[in-house]
Length: 333
Image (cartoon, rainbow, N blue to C red):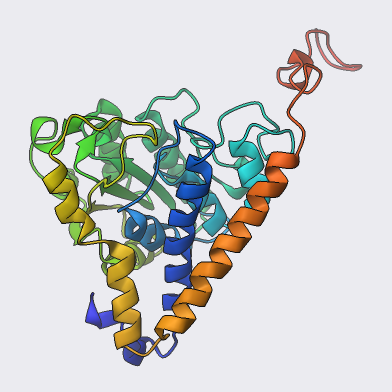
């Protein structure tokens, strides 16, 4: 763990407790949602990136999260867990009212940008647009775009980075590099370093250990501070590994299980627990209580969400989704 952010230097343990909670809640949600949705894209092994990046963003900051972590991103921004889980289960009580996939599209009222088309590239452009809007409006809000190593090779990524650099926009590009795009290993799909690509566009490019939540959070806070101060964009490449399958029912017959086992030994939650105990932030009993509280909170939210009603034809009626086909009084036809 990065000793530069130890309790002795921060003066408070609250940050460390909050980061641990986000990491634990990420894993709890994976297991609870995965029991009901075999197509759920789990975050196991990548929790340090999600917690380190999504913690501490302001309400007006724009966030385009990685689809592998959208719900924890919304939760970190203040969204209600029961409502998020209702959306994941397709219920009318979700933020999405059962009309679209909340696992890849977070609630817009929390300034989250989703994979509206199901394509992984466009959200980088949307986030960059959000940063441009903040600059034009004279606000010190930032935008954050989180994408995978596979997404880093899309044209959308290069176009967004180039515009952000030319316009010196307040945006942070975070590559959640889990080293595999569905079943394509990074060595077969990505040429060179993603952080170096950021530098090639004239912005600061930083590579961090994506299994060290303090290293990720520290790099993120520095990038956000630079963006708010008008110093332009940053690219952060957080190198981690997708321990779980592409989705919960993935047969995973395309990679070496020994490699997966080696990365399991580097479990980011276990490593952070050890650091927290060593630094005296919490003891094992305290961490176990936090784990149980997260489990109970998530399970209770899921039980209530599952009991909520599914959408009816009336709930999904076109007139409730699209603009009316006849003009309202006083409107031009």
